[in-house]
Image (cartoon, rainbow, N blue to C red; front, side, top):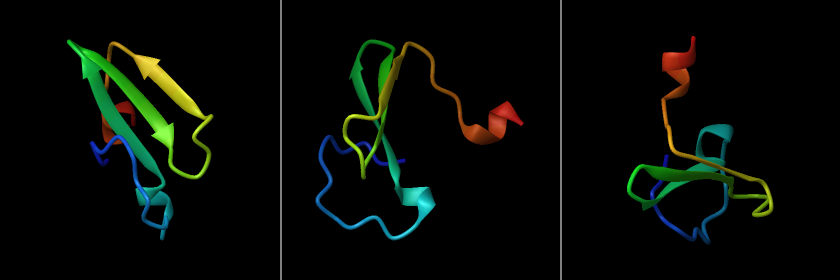
Length: 52
């Protein structure tokens, strides 16, 4: 995932659709680049592979 706060590039595939930001000590925001109103904030981040 990208760590850029903004992204003006077109989203070519689903793997690039979502991005993450580190916003403080152990705080993360995952957001949808196509819908900037869709986001999740958490104090824990794991990869999708770790959830399988």
